[in-house]
Length: 265
Image (cartoon, rainbow, N blue to C red):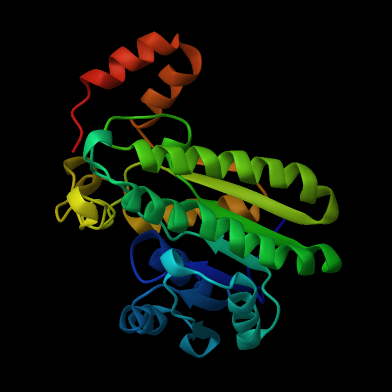
């Protein structure tokens, strides 16, 4: 079991939402934290909300422009020591149809949602294998198991996360590296407000479903409990599970017809 007390935990996308809640909950469990996001002022706010601010280091970074993952991981390790737990939480969603989404938007989404988690994990993995211990937490989504209109890039990136990290688990778990994929549904964050809209600009408004979602603190607690239990994957969702079940168990044409009827922003 992965206990967080005295562990060094690096969380990306830690300036708000699920990442912020994960940081606060991990701090209460006695972890030392390295927090990353673009906005240093917001990271500082999160640090002050933690149980032990003196055991929280800030490492601002724009993962959409990550050039040297090895150098970044060395900077992370310089804060408190080698990273024990990496939480790949940073991500961008999407609120545009395929015909209205340019390739620059798709590339930016994939850089943050897929390539950055791969790069950071790949940079840390040799050290974990050498020590025989490490844990990767991937904050995916129910969209890692289903698809929907206006989410072509987002669903593609989340599906790819599962393919990569399920494969990485097969290779590295026998060498001491654990993997937990968390698949939240509707969580009360700014994911819709900050999603890619037309022209790659922020969508700028929230979804009704997101506004009615679970609090980030509840989601974070469920994620950490799954990590502590060494669960391989956890679905954190209510009614959002229904499309996943339909996609998994019924003919694809039935799911396609069902999804086409759903109203989405």
